[in-house]
Length: 283
Ligand code: G4P
Image 1 (spheres, helix red, strand yellow):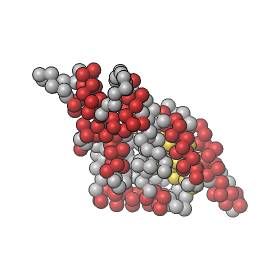
Image 2 (tube, rainbow, N blue to C red):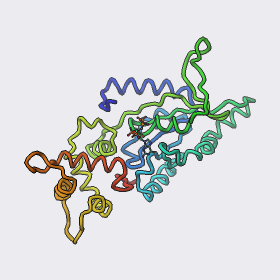
Image 3 (spheres, rainbow, N blue to C red):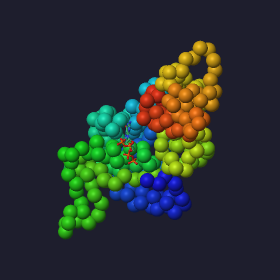
Image 4 (cartoon, rainbow, N blue to C red):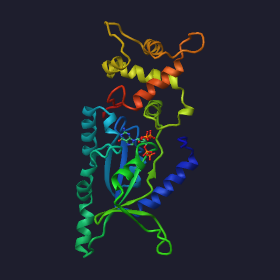
């Protein structure tokens, strides 16, 4: 997937989202628990303002558990329904059904008053690239669900996944463009893997990541690369040099291969091998 966004892409994505949102009752928005603000696009607040909203703090297994709690509170205070989940293992997904009922209680009540029975809540899953939308739809919908709509010769239109008699999910997620509003945001998105690696300066990115880890997750970083603390203050460059040595990242002629070490560190971070790390705090 190409994560570069141009005005044309954004207009198209926005148009599709507007079209789809008009059909639904509930927006299920996935954010990355490691950078919950940077991985959101606030345009969704405008697009989904008449709808019930549920935020899923996904990839919570990779993020700092204490910070997950802070972020849950942050979103609750903003008036969202929010849950901490791991779309990959399915952890946390069981709680969604009752939260959907709660989030959509006004719609359910409206239907009841009008005598409409058994009209399921219709939901769309949205989020920036790589936040886990497809993984979530697969785990949440599982294999037991049935697809409705688009049956040959029967109906034309959207594909809905019927989860149960109360809930239907649009089978194609809505892709939101990341907001790149500052270099800081861009860096965090790059660290969590929400940008095309080909356009990134990996050594610069690893340098910024290591600098952050040295300040906030120092013991996790040093433990991962078996670096003795001994009271010295390491700079990011020193850490990178040690990683080159320990992991045998050399170019021909024993010259340290910083690019290789940078890719290794970023990969370790993205897959949680350094530890459960969050890159930003509410504030
Ligand atoms: P998208 O549709 O929003 O673009 O994202 P997608 O589902 O393709 O997920 C992107 C990557 O994030 C996938 O990894 C997926 O397995 C992983 N992922 C999704 N949710 C979670 C989660 O809660 N925790 C963790 N740890 N990972 C998650 P991948 O590297 O592309 O594939 P794979 O190595 O998992 O096969």
